Image 1 (spheres, rainbow, N blue to C red):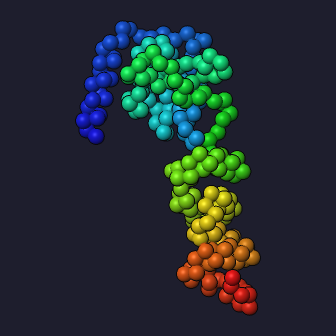
Image 2 (tube, rainbow, N blue to C red):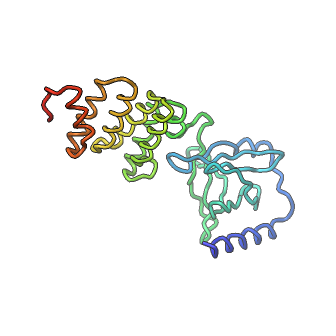
Image 3 (cartoon, rainbow, N blue to C red):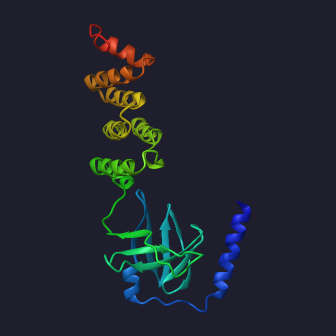
Length: 235
């Protein structure tokens, strides 16, 4: 890791030394290049300008990439050189990764999306649960093991709402978790607890039954089922 960072600093130094003077951006270029670029299904790269200085916001960090040309930048945080390009057929704009082996090769890596575009995580934070679920389901369709749809992360978020007594939010998050992980016993147990804390005994009972049907070792679920409706047979 240390060697990699030293190498990166050397590259940055070389690039900065090779740059001649300050790059001045035209207003047209700033308008065309500013905006949101889709790094992946749940992360965005934000490009903007302050006092004619190009800045980027990525992974909750703001930094100024090294401008090597009016159309190219070196991003140390990514260990990549990027180029602003427009697709010749669709006219959509992208950030293209400049290949070290063939710098002339144009790829279309990070699509520029409308300013109104929101990631599933943004929808989740804003309480747009249907839109968040739709986005997460698309991620799951592409990669069912994606780190963006981990069961434990949604579970942790739901319980953070429970601790703040925001039970409706917890219930909504746990419902998303069930849609993403329908075969998990734990997601039903968590939803049952959120319902119970909110005072909804019936839905707590229904979800504890689901949890117990998937994990017969869940004594808490069994105790609640027997307490809530003792005469009901456990499936």
